[in-house]
Image (tube, rainbow, N blue to C red; front, top):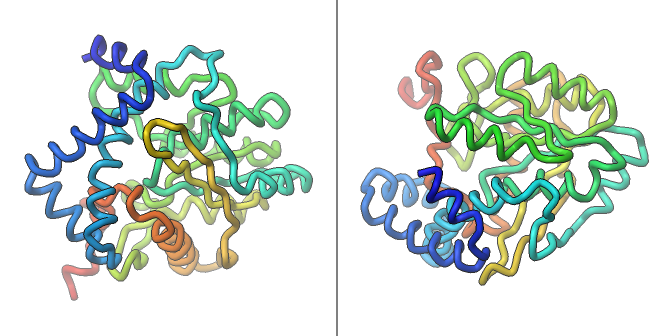
Length: 288
C-alpha cells in the first residue's frame, strides 16, 4: 500500500482527480451503507440530485489528492499555486495581535487550507497548529505523521495535551485549525442541531476563542475542476459565540457550518457519519 501511495504522490493533480472521481462512484455503488448515508444526509440539508452527484465524485477526488498533498517534498509549494479569497481577514487579525481559530468543515480540500496558510504566513507569523486524530492502522499512522510534519505546520493530537498545545499557540498570536463538524470523543461535546437533526458537536472551538481572545474565521479549500488547483475561501462568523452556554455556542458553530456548506454543497462529504455519537453519550433521538 505504501508503494501505491508513493506512486500516486508523483502523479499530476488532474490525473489524481480523474482517478478519484471513478473511485468515488465505485464506492458509492459498491457500498449500500455509504450510499444510504450520502442520500440521507443530503436530503436533511435539502440538497438536490445534481449537487449530490457532484459530491460523490468530489469525495473520491478528496481521497486521491492526499498522496500528493502529504508526500510532496517539504520545500515544494502546492502547484498550481493556491489562490486566496478573503486573506484580508487574516491580515486584520494579525494586525490586532490576535491568534486565529480556523473552522473548516469536511468540505473541499481541508488539507490544503492549513498547508496554504503555512506556505504564506508561517515564516512571519509562526506555524499553524492543526488538531488531528491518530489513524488506527500502523502504516497509515506513520504516513499521516510524516505528512503533517511539514514546515510551518504543527500537529496537535485530540487529547488534553493537544488542547493545551493549541491554547499556547493562540496566546503566542499564532493560528490553529480544526474541523468543528468532526464528532468528538465522549465528554468533549454537546448535542446541538445540524441540518435539523441532533449532532454531537465539539465545544473546543468556542472554548479556544473564549479563553484566548482569538479571532474565529471560517475557511475551506475549494477544489477547482480539471486539476487547476485550489482557492482558500475565508469569511467571518455571522454571529458571536456565546461564552456561558456550551449548547448555544455549539449551535452557533453548526449554523455557521451549514451556511458555509450550502454555498458549495457538491464539495461537502455527505458520506461522513455526522449524526453519530460516542457510545457513552445517549442519542437524544432515541428518547424522542
